[in-house]
Length: 487
Ligand code: NAI
Ligand code: CS2
Image (cartoon, rainbow, N blue to C red; front, top):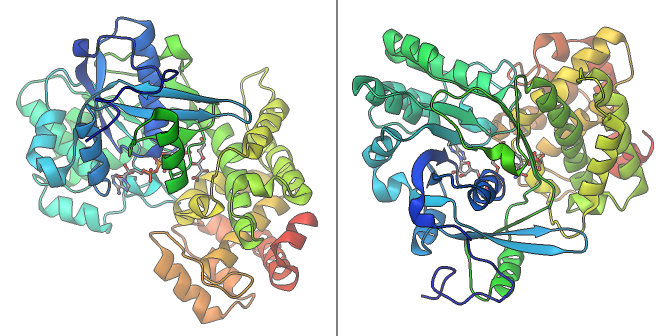
């Protein structure tokens, strides 16, 4: 079959300009999703182009995505990334991948053995917020999570990412091998600490000595990752085919912007991603908070209120002056004041650039996609700044409106009475609460009482209940567009 590895590609499409046979699998990545392909995959590819490094990546999907892994293997582990600016489009063929595996094809043991290979130095992850099996409000391991329950009763045949990592580390310890670094690249605040805490807690339930060995020997750097990479649609794949001259089911389109700030804490070496723009720092937390609150917080605001207002894509919301102003104000008035940034950080320029990025009409980033998994996202995107405003008695109406928008959204019915396809691990429970209150304002305190999302200091706070109720009532009375315009 004609594919990216055996076809003459269009003349302006470049194959990797380095000898791929020199690559060794030193990174095992869990989560060959849209984001990783356009971010870590591309950073590694660019680094391989510029240096003599031999760091290659074995791609693994643990759950869905088996066809993607099969397709990747069929095309010699090559795939394309299309960077779409407002005017220009650039196509790159990524050569950094050495292998691709899925438990459904390769079996669990083969994956564990891969992770336990002596030269593997980093296990990285983009497994979505819910992949950490933690309670979203506290960041602690949720031992009632069904994957965790399954892995505790059968640790040699894990299902969760945590289960795979702990079992692979166990094998390495038994074989007297060096451990690997666990590097989370998910939009989770202090993602390294969350991964570490969840892994240690899980290991403790299995084997306290193993837990101590992991704590002493494994590094869990936190990272701030940024690049807008919408899920590929049929249109995206058709456009990629026409740019390449052949199909690429693994192809992905994204914005030109990219940023990666990494805590420099690795136990078995690391690639020099800094030669291609990544930053290694001692403390990632300020960067993570800035990005999660200003970018992701306003993204969630635009996702819920945009969806309810009838806007399909983030770029569509930016054509509405009310949404555009509200998003900028949310960044500057609700989120920026809550941040503690290193001296010289210009948050206003950052916010202006974010609005520009959101406006890019070439990116078809669906409000529905960002609205997904709100129960996992809201605490880290809105919770910290909400605490700041409560302590300072300052205005948080943008945050309250975002929460009210989420509440209206998870009811599962839009402003025209049409069903909403709500995707969230807590969707059924949230829907039940909404149904009990039948779109009545009393749903606000009821949803604010869900402690996995809102800790009591926020959910039971009278100022929060009042502000969210006011915004919710406005959504009921006037709809999303008017509510946003009035902010
Ligand atoms: P995606 O839906 O394309 O990929 C999700 C990946 O996570 C898949 O590989 C899937 O196999 C894996 N996964 C899902 N549930 C899992 C679980 N319970 N355990 C282990 N693996 C699981 O999504 P995409 O766009 O790649 O985003 C993934 C994550 O990357 C996001 O949740 C976010 O944390 C982070 N991210 C995404 C950005 C974007 O613009 N798409 C930008 C910055 C970060
Ligand atoms: C988005 C993010 O899907 C979402 O929740 O807010 O994936 C966003 O596109 C990225 O974090 C940008 O770096």
